[in-house]
Length: 422
Ligand code: HAM
Image (cartoon, rainbow, N blue to C red; front, top):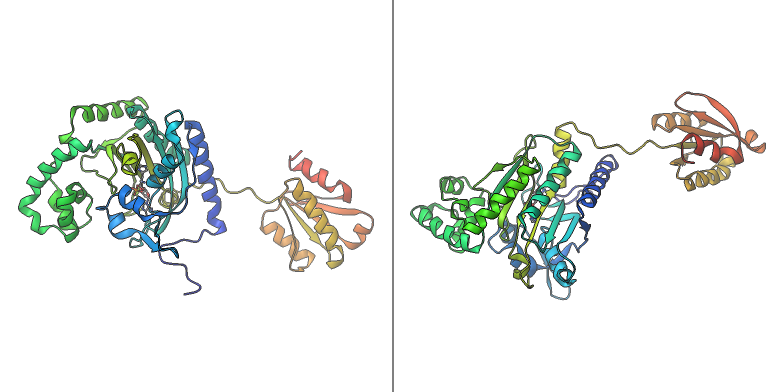
């Protein structure tokens, strides 16, 4: 127990962390290119924010939240997603008073109590963007392009962008009626969760994973068929922008997404080859959410991409992200008496940004050289007692095997020059 991590969580070991750093680097870059600025919100929020924001009838709120009372008897929840917290921060910091649109992005852990399996974790990470203050379909286009551009920059292939519109509350009300008519005769067959959803939010039944419910909604009237003129035009225009940008998509009339706040555009990106949890990202418009959370009506659109799933897909496709560069210098010592001099030299080299290490295990000179070779150090500085007495050290170029004597006070410039750090 003490030596096992909680189910559904991951340790990021050094062999993985360079991938995460590379991934994060690309995220920061692509967001800078598109004019999105980073926001960091707390990992827990008032429970009410998610209940209201994400929706009472969603799986997330009904079954998956990590909710706890703190010592002051407040109900708090580890964030299951990043949109509601970003909306909360947008309102709390009156960002709506700035020039719009407000374009934000975040990278961070999210928490959902689901059944862990390949690609589904209880703590996972999302890269998300949220853009507020414009209902322009071109902004929908931009947000979707940003996601697709990000995947392309990673080198990810075989993606499928699924696109739908879930309309406005008016379209939803019309659709709800049609759905009720359609579902009524088979109502008793629905699972207990969906039976509750039937009254409150029948659209959510499209999101049910049970075989019976998915079978029942097959052939049900889809929301696109109920779109009002305004929503239909918006949807058309989003598609025109995507076509203009050369982004391929597939219309998915039964895509409803697992969160209640969506209006109009809804999309999901799936990838082949990573198993059942193939959604590597999803998002959409949420024109009612800001008001729902307590502000004036402000339109918004965004996405969340699952970083663990993206890394799984990259691995599956044999794409490696840039490895951290090899270390530069290993300072090897003949024995304990020269260690203080080695220690000082290591500090000087590091101050010049040369990645430098020394021996902490009192290994023999031979073992130190073997270690440096195995770990891809470019140079080894060899400090011997007699040589040091004459302010001399030897420097071995590990790629050629050549060795030269160098004055102790010339070591830093000798190496900095050869490692192009001057
Ligand atoms: P979501 O579809 O619930 O949307 O999650 C987005 C992505 O997070 C999924 O496509 C998936 O890649 C990843 N993900 C979700 N759950 C897990 C899990 N248990 N383990 C691993 N990865 C997971 C949202 O969260 C919305 N906030 C997206 C959004 C932003 N919509 C508008 N703005």
